[in-house]
Image (cartoon, rainbow, N blue to C red; front, side, top):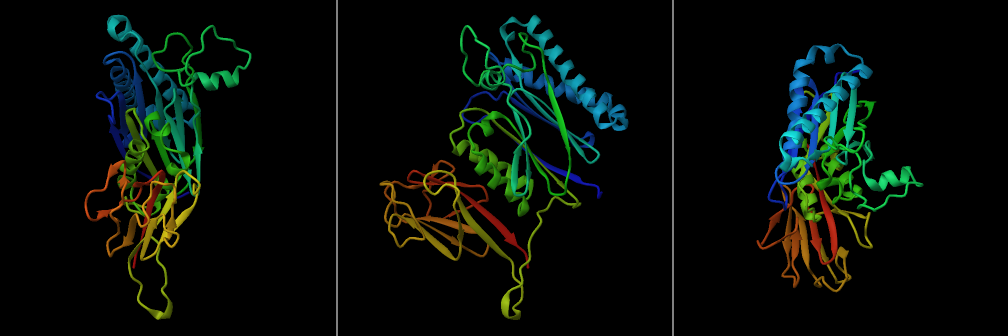
Length: 371
Protein backbone atom coordinates (compact mmCIF):
# COMPACT_ATOMS: atom_id res chain seq x y z
CA UNK A 1 0.00 0.00 0.00
CA UNK A 2 1.23 3.50 -0.85
CA UNK A 3 2.26 5.49 2.21
CA UNK A 4 -0.54 7.87 3.14
CA UNK A 5 0.27 11.35 4.39
CA UNK A 6 -1.89 13.18 6.90
CA UNK A 7 -2.79 16.83 6.38
CA UNK A 8 -4.76 18.51 9.13
CA UNK A 9 -6.34 21.78 10.19
CA UNK A 10 -7.99 22.70 13.48
CA UNK A 11 -10.11 25.53 14.79
CA UNK A 12 -11.20 25.97 18.41
CA UNK A 13 -13.74 28.78 18.81
CA UNK A 14 -15.43 30.05 21.97
CA UNK A 15 -18.57 30.62 19.90
CA UNK A 16 -21.26 32.49 21.80
CA UNK A 17 -19.73 31.73 25.21
CA UNK A 18 -17.31 33.96 27.08
CA UNK A 19 -15.03 31.09 28.14
CA UNK A 20 -13.65 28.34 25.95
CA UNK A 21 -13.60 24.96 27.69
CA UNK A 22 -12.53 23.06 24.56
CA UNK A 23 -8.93 22.08 23.96
CA UNK A 24 -7.25 20.64 20.86
CA UNK A 25 -3.89 18.87 20.77
CA UNK A 26 -2.13 17.88 17.55
CA UNK A 27 1.23 16.12 17.29
CA UNK A 28 1.69 15.12 13.62
CA UNK A 29 5.18 13.69 14.23
CA UNK A 30 3.72 11.09 16.60
CA UNK A 31 0.37 10.80 14.82
CA UNK A 32 -1.72 12.10 17.75
CA UNK A 33 -4.93 14.10 17.12
CA UNK A 34 -7.11 14.95 20.14
CA UNK A 35 -10.18 17.05 20.96
CA UNK A 36 -11.38 17.56 24.55
CA UNK A 37 -14.52 19.35 25.74
CA UNK A 38 -14.34 20.25 29.42
CA UNK A 39 -17.20 20.84 31.83
CA UNK A 40 -17.32 22.18 35.37
CA UNK A 41 -17.73 25.26 37.52
CA UNK A 42 -15.62 28.38 36.91
CA UNK A 43 -12.40 27.38 35.12
CA UNK A 44 -12.78 23.68 35.85
CA UNK A 45 -13.80 22.62 32.36
CA UNK A 46 -10.84 24.27 30.71
CA UNK A 47 -8.50 22.90 33.38
CA UNK A 48 -9.74 19.34 32.82
CA UNK A 49 -9.44 19.58 29.04
CA UNK A 50 -5.95 21.08 29.21
CA UNK A 51 -4.87 18.43 31.71
CA UNK A 52 -5.77 15.66 29.26
CA UNK A 53 -4.05 17.37 26.32
CA UNK A 54 -0.92 18.02 28.40
CA UNK A 55 -0.80 14.46 29.78
CA UNK A 56 -1.20 12.89 26.34
CA UNK A 57 1.49 15.20 24.94
CA UNK A 58 3.94 14.30 27.71
CA UNK A 59 3.29 10.58 27.69
CA UNK A 60 3.26 10.16 23.91
CA UNK A 61 6.69 11.84 23.83
CA UNK A 62 8.01 9.70 26.68
CA UNK A 63 6.68 6.49 25.12
CA UNK A 64 7.39 7.37 21.49
CA UNK A 65 9.70 4.43 20.84
CA UNK A 66 7.34 2.01 22.56
CA UNK A 67 4.44 3.23 20.43
CA UNK A 68 6.48 3.04 17.23
CA UNK A 69 7.30 -0.64 17.81
CA UNK A 70 3.84 -1.63 19.05
CA UNK A 71 1.24 -3.64 17.18
CA UNK A 72 -2.11 -1.86 16.73
CA UNK A 73 -3.55 -3.69 19.76
CA UNK A 74 -0.52 -2.82 21.87
CA UNK A 75 -0.71 0.81 20.75
CA UNK A 76 -4.37 0.93 21.79
CA UNK A 77 -3.43 -0.36 25.24
CA UNK A 78 -0.77 2.35 25.59
CA UNK A 79 -3.23 5.08 24.55
CA UNK A 80 -5.76 3.75 27.06
CA UNK A 81 -3.09 4.01 29.77
CA UNK A 82 -2.36 7.61 28.75
CA UNK A 83 -6.01 8.62 29.07
CA UNK A 84 -6.34 6.80 32.39
CA UNK A 85 -3.28 8.70 33.64
CA UNK A 86 -4.98 11.95 32.59
CA UNK A 87 -8.11 10.86 34.49
CA UNK A 88 -6.03 10.29 37.64
CA UNK A 89 -4.43 13.72 37.29
CA UNK A 90 -7.85 15.34 37.09
CA UNK A 91 -8.92 13.52 40.25
CA UNK A 92 -5.79 14.78 42.03
CA UNK A 93 -6.56 18.37 41.03
CA UNK A 94 -10.17 17.94 42.19
CA UNK A 95 -8.94 16.94 45.66
CA UNK A 96 -6.60 19.95 45.91
CA UNK A 97 -8.97 22.59 44.57
CA UNK A 98 -12.50 22.32 45.92
CA UNK A 99 -13.88 25.08 43.68
CA UNK A 100 -13.29 22.92 40.59
CA UNK A 101 -13.92 19.53 42.17
CA UNK A 102 -16.72 18.77 39.70
CA UNK A 103 -14.65 19.29 36.56
CA UNK A 104 -14.72 16.61 33.85
CA UNK A 105 -13.89 16.39 30.19
CA UNK A 106 -14.59 14.36 27.09
CA UNK A 107 -11.77 13.03 24.93
CA UNK A 108 -11.80 11.97 21.27
CA UNK A 109 -8.39 10.80 20.12
CA UNK A 110 -7.09 9.41 16.84
CA UNK A 111 -3.65 7.81 16.53
CA UNK A 112 -2.17 7.27 13.08
CA UNK A 113 -0.41 3.92 13.33
CA UNK A 114 1.04 2.88 10.01
CA UNK A 115 -1.90 2.45 7.66
CA UNK A 116 -4.36 2.20 10.56
CA UNK A 117 -6.33 4.88 12.38
CA UNK A 118 -6.76 3.95 16.06
CA UNK A 119 -9.65 5.61 17.87
CA UNK A 120 -10.19 6.16 21.59
CA UNK A 121 -13.07 8.16 23.00
CA UNK A 122 -15.07 8.93 26.11
CA UNK A 123 -17.97 11.37 26.47
CA UNK A 124 -19.81 12.98 23.57
CA UNK A 125 -17.06 14.48 21.44
CA UNK A 126 -17.27 12.65 18.14
CA UNK A 127 -15.15 11.17 15.37
CA UNK A 128 -16.57 10.91 11.85
CA UNK A 129 -15.16 9.25 8.76
CA UNK A 130 -16.04 10.72 5.38
CA UNK A 131 -15.26 8.13 2.71
CA UNK A 132 -16.93 9.59 -0.35
CA UNK A 133 -19.82 9.64 -0.73
CA UNK A 134 -20.66 8.29 2.75
CA UNK A 135 -20.32 9.90 6.17
CA UNK A 136 -19.99 7.46 9.09
CA UNK A 137 -20.06 8.19 12.81
CA UNK A 138 -17.30 6.11 14.41
CA UNK A 139 -18.12 6.88 18.06
CA UNK A 140 -21.19 6.62 20.25
CA UNK A 141 -22.07 9.31 22.77
CA UNK A 142 -21.69 8.23 26.39
CA UNK A 143 -24.80 10.02 27.59
CA UNK A 144 -27.85 9.17 29.65
CA UNK A 145 -30.09 8.80 26.59
CA UNK A 146 -27.92 6.04 25.12
CA UNK A 147 -27.44 4.45 28.53
CA UNK A 148 -31.21 4.07 28.86
CA UNK A 149 -31.38 2.52 25.39
CA UNK A 150 -28.80 -0.03 26.47
CA UNK A 151 -30.42 -0.62 29.88
CA UNK A 152 -34.20 -0.38 29.33
CA UNK A 153 -34.98 -1.94 32.72
CA UNK A 154 -32.99 0.65 34.66
CA UNK A 155 -35.27 2.93 36.70
CA UNK A 156 -33.44 6.03 37.96
CA UNK A 157 -34.78 7.89 41.01
CA UNK A 158 -34.47 11.12 39.07
CA UNK A 159 -34.27 11.44 35.31
CA UNK A 160 -31.44 13.73 34.19
CA UNK A 161 -31.41 15.38 30.75
CA UNK A 162 -30.64 12.97 27.92
CA UNK A 163 -27.31 14.65 27.13
CA UNK A 164 -26.00 14.19 30.69
CA UNK A 165 -22.73 12.28 30.41
CA UNK A 166 -22.44 8.90 32.11
CA UNK A 167 -18.78 8.55 31.16
CA UNK A 168 -16.08 11.24 31.19
CA UNK A 169 -12.53 11.72 32.37
CA UNK A 170 -12.70 13.06 35.93
CA UNK A 171 -16.15 11.59 36.58
CA UNK A 172 -15.96 9.78 39.92
CA UNK A 173 -19.31 8.01 40.01
CA UNK A 174 -18.63 5.53 37.19
CA UNK A 175 -15.84 3.39 35.83
CA UNK A 176 -13.90 5.32 33.22
CA UNK A 177 -14.87 3.05 30.30
CA UNK A 178 -12.81 4.40 27.40
CA UNK A 179 -14.06 2.90 24.12
CA UNK A 180 -11.62 1.99 21.38
CA UNK A 181 -11.80 0.83 17.78
CA UNK A 182 -9.94 1.39 14.56
CA UNK A 183 -9.96 1.01 10.80
CA UNK A 184 -7.58 0.66 7.88
CA UNK A 185 -6.99 3.94 6.11
CA UNK A 186 -7.77 4.48 2.45
CA UNK A 187 -6.59 7.16 0.10
CA UNK A 188 -8.66 10.36 0.41
CA UNK A 189 -10.27 9.37 3.73
CA UNK A 190 -11.35 12.47 5.64
CA UNK A 191 -11.67 12.28 9.43
CA UNK A 192 -13.48 14.86 11.54
CA UNK A 193 -12.91 15.05 15.30
CA UNK A 194 -15.24 17.58 16.90
CA UNK A 195 -16.87 18.76 20.10
CA UNK A 196 -20.64 18.67 20.50
CA UNK A 197 -20.73 22.35 19.57
CA UNK A 198 -20.45 21.07 16.01
CA UNK A 199 -22.29 17.75 16.11
CA UNK A 200 -25.30 19.00 18.09
CA UNK A 201 -26.01 21.87 15.73
CA UNK A 202 -24.97 20.82 12.22
CA UNK A 203 -27.11 18.12 10.55
CA UNK A 204 -25.29 15.10 9.15
CA UNK A 205 -26.44 16.11 5.67
CA UNK A 206 -24.64 19.43 6.00
CA UNK A 207 -21.54 17.84 7.51
CA UNK A 208 -21.34 15.46 4.58
CA UNK A 209 -21.65 18.25 2.04
CA UNK A 210 -19.01 20.37 3.76
CA UNK A 211 -16.55 17.48 4.08
CA UNK A 212 -17.08 16.72 0.40
CA UNK A 213 -15.40 20.07 -0.17
CA UNK A 214 -12.03 18.43 0.56
CA UNK A 215 -12.20 17.06 -2.98
CA UNK A 216 -11.72 20.58 -4.33
CA UNK A 217 -10.34 22.53 -1.36
CA UNK A 218 -7.70 21.97 1.29
CA UNK A 219 -8.53 21.07 4.89
CA UNK A 220 -7.33 24.59 5.76
CA UNK A 221 -10.26 25.97 3.75
CA UNK A 222 -12.88 23.44 4.82
CA UNK A 223 -12.29 23.53 8.60
CA UNK A 224 -13.40 27.18 9.06
CA UNK A 225 -16.51 26.33 7.02
CA UNK A 226 -17.41 23.70 9.65
CA UNK A 227 -17.13 26.27 12.43
CA UNK A 228 -19.13 28.83 10.45
CA UNK A 229 -21.83 26.24 9.80
CA UNK A 230 -22.09 25.38 13.52
CA UNK A 231 -22.47 29.04 14.48
CA UNK A 232 -24.91 29.65 11.62
CA UNK A 233 -27.04 26.75 12.86
CA UNK A 234 -27.30 28.38 16.27
CA UNK A 235 -24.68 26.53 18.32
CA UNK A 236 -24.57 28.01 21.83
CA UNK A 237 -21.51 25.99 22.86
CA UNK A 238 -17.80 26.19 22.19
CA UNK A 239 -17.04 24.93 18.70
CA UNK A 240 -13.99 22.79 17.92
CA UNK A 241 -13.24 21.00 14.66
CA UNK A 242 -10.11 19.03 13.81
CA UNK A 243 -10.05 17.84 10.22
CA UNK A 244 -7.61 15.26 8.85
CA UNK A 245 -7.17 14.06 5.29
CA UNK A 246 -5.26 10.88 4.42
CA UNK A 247 -3.78 11.18 0.96
CA UNK A 248 -1.05 9.80 -1.27
CA UNK A 249 -0.14 13.34 -2.30
CA UNK A 250 2.97 15.02 -0.91
CA UNK A 251 1.42 18.47 -0.79
CA UNK A 252 -1.63 19.83 0.98
CA UNK A 253 -3.58 20.61 -2.16
CA UNK A 254 -6.96 19.48 -3.47
CA UNK A 255 -7.53 16.88 -6.14
CA UNK A 256 -8.89 18.80 -9.11
CA UNK A 257 -10.81 17.53 -12.09
CA UNK A 258 -10.13 18.30 -15.75
CA UNK A 259 -12.94 18.22 -18.29
CA UNK A 260 -12.50 18.09 -22.07
CA UNK A 261 -14.52 20.81 -23.72
CA UNK A 262 -16.34 20.02 -26.99
CA UNK A 263 -15.21 21.14 -30.40
CA UNK A 264 -11.49 20.88 -29.70
CA UNK A 265 -11.53 24.05 -27.61
CA UNK A 266 -8.71 24.62 -25.15
CA UNK A 267 -9.40 23.46 -21.63
CA UNK A 268 -9.97 26.32 -19.21
CA UNK A 269 -10.12 26.68 -15.46
CA UNK A 270 -13.55 27.36 -14.04
CA UNK A 271 -15.25 27.36 -10.65
CA UNK A 272 -18.43 25.28 -10.49
CA UNK A 273 -20.97 25.73 -7.72
CA UNK A 274 -24.22 24.39 -6.39
CA UNK A 275 -26.68 24.92 -3.54
CA UNK A 276 -27.59 22.03 -1.24
CA UNK A 277 -30.80 22.47 0.75
CA UNK A 278 -30.50 21.71 4.45
CA UNK A 279 -34.11 21.89 5.60
CA UNK A 280 -37.69 22.59 4.57
CA UNK A 281 -39.62 20.94 1.73
CA UNK A 282 -36.56 21.09 -0.55
CA UNK A 283 -34.28 19.31 1.94
CA UNK A 284 -31.83 17.07 0.10
CA UNK A 285 -32.22 18.89 -3.22
CA UNK A 286 -29.04 20.05 -4.95
CA UNK A 287 -29.29 22.84 -7.53
CA UNK A 288 -26.30 23.59 -9.79
CA UNK A 289 -25.42 27.24 -10.39
CA UNK A 290 -24.93 27.89 -14.07
CA UNK A 291 -24.09 31.44 -15.18
CA UNK A 292 -26.65 32.90 -12.81
CA UNK A 293 -29.74 31.96 -10.85
CA UNK A 294 -32.40 33.97 -9.07
CA UNK A 295 -34.11 32.89 -5.87
CA UNK A 296 -37.53 34.28 -5.04
CA UNK A 297 -41.26 33.70 -4.67
CA UNK A 298 -41.94 34.33 -8.35
CA UNK A 299 -42.64 31.04 -10.18
CA UNK A 300 -40.21 31.98 -12.97
CA UNK A 301 -37.26 32.07 -10.53
CA UNK A 302 -34.72 29.24 -10.89
CA UNK A 303 -35.33 28.46 -7.20
CA UNK A 304 -38.88 29.28 -6.15
CA UNK A 305 -39.51 29.64 -2.40
CA UNK A 306 -42.93 30.90 -1.41
CA UNK A 307 -43.15 30.79 2.39
CA UNK A 308 -44.47 34.30 2.97
CA UNK A 309 -41.05 35.68 3.91
CA UNK A 310 -39.41 35.70 0.49
CA UNK A 311 -39.69 38.60 -1.97
CA UNK A 312 -40.74 37.96 -5.56
CA UNK A 313 -37.14 38.34 -6.79
CA UNK A 314 -35.17 38.03 -3.58
CA UNK A 315 -31.53 37.09 -4.29
CA UNK A 316 -29.26 36.42 -7.24
CA UNK A 317 -26.23 34.11 -7.25
CA UNK A 318 -23.90 34.30 -10.23
CA UNK A 319 -20.55 32.98 -11.34
CA UNK A 320 -17.52 35.18 -11.97
CA UNK A 321 -14.04 34.37 -13.23
CA UNK A 322 -12.76 33.80 -9.69
CA UNK A 323 -15.77 32.34 -7.91
CA UNK A 324 -19.40 32.92 -7.02
CA UNK A 325 -21.08 36.07 -5.79
CA UNK A 326 -24.40 36.65 -4.04
CA UNK A 327 -26.42 39.82 -4.54
CA UNK A 328 -29.54 40.69 -2.54
CA UNK A 329 -32.12 42.18 -4.94
CA UNK A 330 -33.60 44.63 -2.45
CA UNK A 331 -35.59 42.00 -0.56
CA UNK A 332 -37.86 42.99 2.31
CA UNK A 333 -36.60 40.48 4.88
CA UNK A 334 -32.99 40.24 3.77
CA UNK A 335 -30.55 37.52 2.81
CA UNK A 336 -28.26 36.00 5.45
CA UNK A 337 -24.85 34.36 5.06
CA UNK A 338 -23.72 32.46 8.17
CA UNK A 339 -26.43 34.25 10.18
CA UNK A 340 -25.20 37.71 9.16
CA UNK A 341 -27.46 39.87 7.02
CA UNK A 342 -25.97 40.81 3.66
CA UNK A 343 -25.50 44.57 3.56
CA UNK A 344 -23.00 45.04 0.74
CA UNK A 345 -24.03 45.17 -2.91
CA UNK A 346 -22.22 41.92 -3.67
CA UNK A 347 -20.86 39.24 -1.32
CA UNK A 348 -18.29 36.64 -2.40
CA UNK A 349 -19.31 33.10 -1.44
CA UNK A 350 -16.93 30.62 0.16
CA UNK A 351 -17.33 26.84 0.03
CA UNK A 352 -19.44 25.81 3.04
CA UNK A 353 -21.25 29.12 3.52
CA UNK A 354 -24.77 28.72 4.91
CA UNK A 355 -27.31 30.94 3.14
CA UNK A 356 -30.71 31.67 4.68
CA UNK A 357 -33.57 33.15 2.67
CA UNK A 358 -36.88 33.37 4.48
CA UNK A 359 -37.19 30.13 6.45
CA UNK A 360 -35.01 28.12 4.06
CA UNK A 361 -31.34 27.28 4.61
CA UNK A 362 -28.96 26.02 1.96
CA UNK A 363 -25.23 25.32 1.86
CA UNK A 364 -23.10 26.74 -0.93
CA UNK A 365 -20.62 24.23 -2.38
CA UNK A 366 -17.98 24.87 -5.02
CA UNK A 367 -15.30 23.02 -6.96
CA UNK A 368 -12.43 24.41 -9.01
CA UNK A 369 -11.89 22.64 -12.30
CA UNK A 370 -8.34 23.13 -13.56
CA UNK A 371 -7.22 23.77 -17.06
